[in-house]
Length: 597
Ligand SMILES: Nc1ncnc2c1ncn2[C@@H]1O[C@H](COP(=O)(O)OP(=O)(O)OP(=O)(O)O)[C@@H](O)[C@H]1O
Image 1 (cartoon, rainbow, N blue to C red):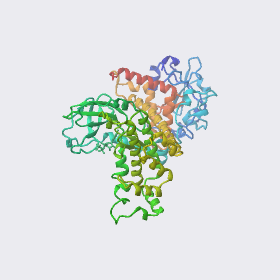
Image 2: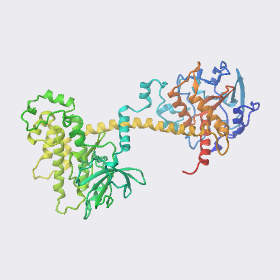
Image 3: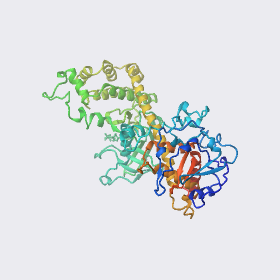
Image 4: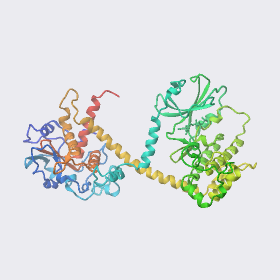
């Protein structure tokens, strides 16, 4: 921020020279004290016992955190914090002693409309969005993009309310944490003594599956040595000979339902001639096989019957009535139809992209489709194409992809990796809609007529809109949470700055650095934020108040705040704009002294 935007400060007369405030005022040449609202008269600090080292908030307990409509800066970065309020003359600082406490304020500010936001309890808005951001009828572009509304006052003990107002819903958080956790999970690498430390630019190889003897391919999570990004590596063992040119086309496929292929290289790091395909790593992914057809809950988890078992004692599907089917859905044995459509819509979208690129998937099976959250992706895309296959007809392979999708859909319907076709179709007919049955029949068709993935669209029909709607709703929820978290990140950055400045034992051999100049003001502000107490001396913890004050600081609001010295002898009335300037200046000083990163 340009320091010239601040008016020069003329030292007041008669400050108690021994006070820290005087030190501050004498040293600071850039930060004027100004603007005290009418509400000063309401201050109820006279009764403060002088012997206690605490900052009373009594009257400061906010009835409403939003101050009166006030002039907002055009932008915190490039505009003066309150040019519209500051008269062009040098402000005169006055002091007044009330009950042993000295207040400092400027004469010009006596007529200021800016109130002591926290103490006044006024009901108008220090607006946080929309039209409320208008200041004196002038819309502030910065104000309109400021923050989520400050939540109503809530105390740190009120957990349920806090969770709703400040933190993201548990479901989203659990999903995020699960993904974060995934990349920290490590396998006991002693089980893999032959694993190289690094392969080309990839290190920290962690097998994604247990090692199978004589496997033709293995998969790893790895970390890029330069970017530290995680990638999924597919190693094709003993791959000698040419690499298909199709892999270059696969690299160009960038689709949300296809795991992206980035790089292909051969290596001898595994003591053979391996070909390694490098893909995006999607933490928390499990294969459709694992999620729906393998271990875990549901029919495939072993707690339900195999409807197509040859065992004559096994329950036959046709003996079950419709309500038994519905019960099975309710207990997770059968997949709800909506979930099936979601999987199918996403997989047809993937096939559409692959086929339009003139490629074929060739490996659309349950173990090669991965799910993370609601997203379904074709994994190891192109790996089946790694070796050139001169005799393969791509059109034929695409027809086979559609049949593979039909088989996968059928397996999901009956929750079994293998099934007898007529019996499975009968079950689909009894359990699911005719549309789903017809789609599967179409996909499984062996008719010589060439079918295209785009033919599937009319069969999916309105279900496509349901999927779009569901995705949009999810996006809405996530965007709302993102907005909150963006605010939290912003507040964290201010706190980090404050933390770096406050109580710093020394800077550039100056042991009093954090106690003098601009930093003294920041120390008092920190006390006001975190160490306020109630009238009877108990800690006053109100997260909404903290968030509100930090927001005002970040915005450089012209609203005023009272900062009391620890000896309670002085009260400094200062605007958030000034505090912001102090913080920026102090932090810049730190940055200059810090070694280059
Ligand atoms: N891009 C990816 N990001 C994250 N995890 C993935 C990715 N691709 C696959 N996985 C996960 O890696 C695990 C192993 O996949 P892989 O295909 O090697 O399994 P597999 O069934 O053992 O197959 P194969 O026997 O052919 O190696 C699966 O749990 C799968 O969910």
